[in-house]
Amino acid sequence: MAYHEAFWVAVAAAAPVIALANTVTITDIVGARYSPGARLRAGNSGSYYVVIFIAAANLVFQAAWMVAALISLLHENDSYFPSVVIAGLGGGLIYVLVTAYFSLKFRQELHQEMESTRTRANKDGGLRTVVGWRSAD
Image (tube, rainbow, N blue to C red; front, side, top):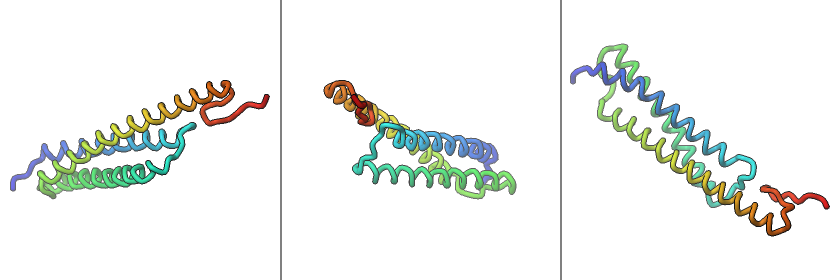
């Protein structure tokens, strides 16, 4: 098998970028879930933890691809099969896109929930806030 130096340079550059994008989307999901006014719903907790677990695995895989690339560049030979690395990087990127979609979906649900709470508060005389607090008369 021929050595693919340019491929490994590209992998060494792409893996940290994918890992950073993964971190940003997960931070957004966690921030939205625990933001003021967000209620933790039991129905979403299982899928939430699955997303977080897979994101952690994605970070580990991206680090592994970067290490494989650096080892290949150091020893000037392919340390791993390029097709497997391509699949790993592509899978990581697809996962980041799926996570970004779920982040947007969760934020939309949160926004709808907050709007519905405001509507109920207005029907109750406008004394409630988003978190359900009632001012003293």
